[in-house]
Length: 274
Image 1 (cartoon, one colour):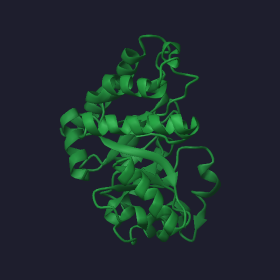
Image 2 (cartoon, rainbow, N blue to C red):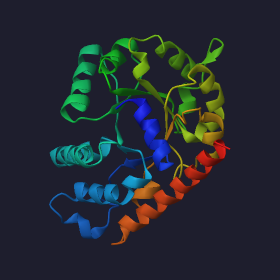
Image 3 (cartoon, rainbow, N blue to C red):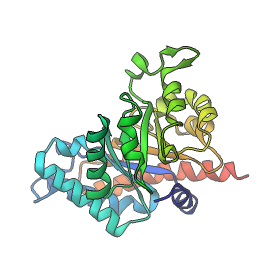
Image 4 (cartoon, rainbow, N blue to C red):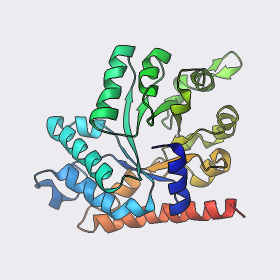
């Protein structure tokens, strides 16, 4: 999937919502737990209820790996369901991989070839040879961790490196890597005030923005500082949508939460065109 196709879907749906599929068996409705594959059953219901309101889905792989082979099979079934039924949706493997080159090439093969994701999140700490194996895949995107939404981001990411902060240096250096046109970047919604400076470095790149909703990030602030002429944002919400209800009405409750965000996004997009 090319970024232009993502932009087309954003314009069509008036939404730049990404739904995070972070499935916790302790939180899903009790009536699903005894099914043969409760994780996939939950995901399928959420996808069916929200697909017309969002442009992307982002399973966090830790929530599947935690359940061993059953979890991995559920992840496989989930991405197969998305690719077969909703191929216009951008899919993100939130795996935060990053290792030496030959290991990264195996990760890339696993997520891009075997599972068929459109993109994967990657940690940049080990440098270009750990990231470029992902970037080598045509039509696939590597979403680099730049400035994350967690409190610990201030431990390292905002520390000064000469005249720049570390996260700024990461972004600047990454622009020189081979196939860097296949890069997107993670910038947390709780760090919205940093987005204006980030846009000076990467004005045209897509940004994956977690942290709206349960983590307290402001959608309006994210758009004020981070939106570009092609929108250039994928704003993720996970817990706020997934666990809007723990009852048999969970699909409708999830849809309503997604609809609230989509309606806000629609208003922002329409006002930006005035």
